[in-house]
Image (cartoon, each protein chain N blue to C red):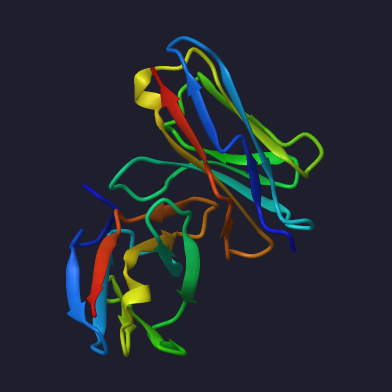
Length: 110
Length: 111
């Protein structure tokens, strides 16, 4: 059983739309949650981290966490073609080990 | 900050050979991680250093893999007796908190 699950996609959205990316995790003791963006052939780069239930906004990005449902999501408002990438969800359970999902490939259509 | 650097960027080797990769973290970052990533998968945790101490190592890491961070600065990852299944991107990340900054990776191809 995978510990962090993401739909692999691709998720296609038109330019200017809201992209919604979802992630579920199995360890109820998980404490910190991260979204990374990875362009093809490049290494992951951090977009946002979230630690408590609710929403956290940073520019066009909003992370949402629901620990009861073991669910974390990333919303990208006003999606741009440059947002086309793979988005990785990562979870930490309070140890030094981070578990990554397989990523969701996002395509923003111009 | 000059960013995390990794060397080499690409390595092609024959099955059975040993390879060593180097990671130079962002200066003053005491945390250093190694990951392996294959196509279509997320990064897979291999090991973690806090300063020079290796505090966690994945159970998936066989005895052929070893990592060091002798002075708490740069780190090396060695793979002995490489196998074709070792072909992957090897990523290093560093940080001072739980935020990780990834290097460009070393792509290993085992023939």
